[in-house]
Length: 338
Image 1: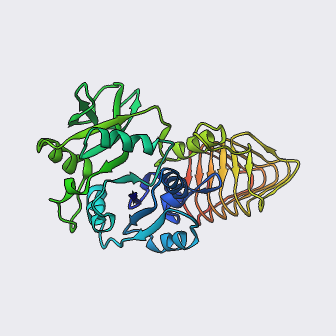
Image 2 (image 1 turned 135 degrees about the horizontal axis):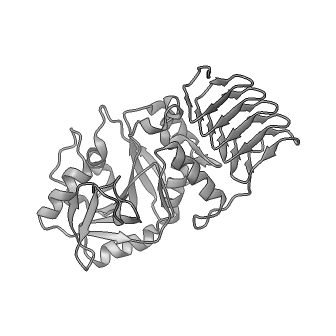
Image 3 (image 1 turned 60 degrees about the vertical axis):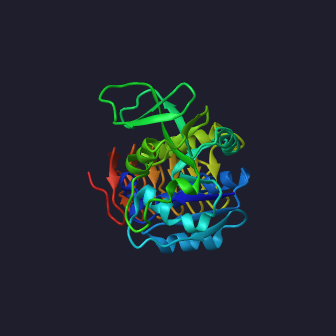
């Protein structure tokens, strides 16, 4: 089986992390977000994936070269951003005639893809869309379906809080359902492809489940996904807590909370406190510094006695010793100030 993994987003909500790192390549505990997605596909029998992006293509080349095991990766260069639908249509020549998965590469989930495939084929669906239940759907468009689960309509975002099933960003698609669209322009799969396929009477079904699901597009969600992995909330995945890479240096007089990830080459000095935070490769936390609820990007430095709370410190940036910042975003290769 094959899949298309969508990795074309710019990750603007995650800046400054994504000023120098592609969102899908950010580490999530011990490996990149994209590794988690590909590993899950492999566990469910996907042997080849197609990926494309017009942004930071060279970073993906390094990722692909270093990736080991299944699934095999075919790269398709986008000369311009094609949006979700356009990227999928552009990949059709590589997926063959059988149903294939398409999914966002920046979502963490333990969705049972095998059960979703069975659901799709049992109903003779042209398209199956994974659904996720949320208590407040204001940030999402709504999906209307009949009692059999056949989707009848995509609706606008509600104005008031309402619990609803939303599009979880994983699809199983029959290539023939997408044959009418050209691959040379941006296409929205939610606003253009799905509504038109439904109007034409093709069978579009939702697949509801109790799977874990989280969009990793914000610093808060990136941290939450890290904590959930450390807490063992995803099926089949477990880590020691706190998680410390074998090449990190952590002074025995420092304090690390349970929800902490310390990546390779990171250094934590004596009497430092780190809790509910992620330290990426080469980050330095000075003597007596405090880092709480924050993300410290590669090679960034928090000086001795500094306090960082609820913040994102970009790659190569510096928080001077003794300074306190809260709720800040410190740009890459800059120096924080009061």
